[in-house]
Length: 249
Ligand SMILES: NC(=O)c1ccc[n+]([C@@H]2O[C@H](COP(=O)([O-])OP(=O)(O)OC[C@H]3O[C@@H](n4cnc5c(N)ncnc54)[C@H](OP(=O)(O)O)[C@@H]3O)[C@@H](O)[C@H]2O)c1
Image 1 (tube, helix red, strand yellow):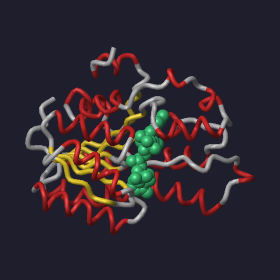
Image 2: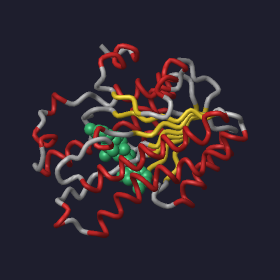
Image 3: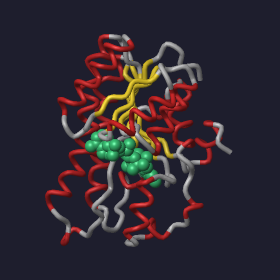
């Protein structure tokens, strides 16, 4: 897929799936805008990519920071074609009866409200351009409960509904909204899950996880028309049909 002339904003791009996606989209010719809280780390990833990348320190749980980052993207590169709502957290992992209410709420602020903040900030820009793609990183946890992940499962289920909402309200205005459920990926988040030792996911072997370059490749494919049958829905990277369409075999 040639992304020359396209501008892609990625949240949570300081490491893991977001950083791999930033590299992949830049390799495909896009200008990429990298958002994360850790300004040094996100600047480091942007530095590896070069002048096609802009790093913007941003906490997605704060709407005004997301709005300012989107404005910086448009000011710098002149447009905005793809928004990838990837920033996410899972800690602290806890059963409901022991969960810290403030920490539980903070996960909702990042994983659910952060996704809304992104959509809210980019939609006016995309609608003025008569089109754009909004991809949210979803999870199997959006569709099924997982022990001690009530915060995470609830937030991902809500984010999945936001994908459906964006599709319902804006598909006829040229907005492509869809989600990627990446399976288990070898990133910092899986290290935190393993350290918890709580549920079957924490017991998986490290070799069971796919590398972050796999979801990055899928995200690029999702920007093209071949992914249109999945608009308003999640695509699962565990699905063999999807893997072969993306070229991951
Ligand atoms: N790894 C998996 O197995 C897996 C499976 C299914 C879904 N996912 C989803 O994939 C996405 C990426 O996760 P990952 O596996 O790549 O994890 P990761 O390596 O822990 O990366 C998470 C990224 O999100 C950023 N982030 C966290 N809170 C943020 C905030 N408030 N504002 C802005 N950025 C924030 C982090 O950067 P800073 O700390 O610098 O802010 C980091 O760049 C998440 O939505 C996750 O739920 C992962």
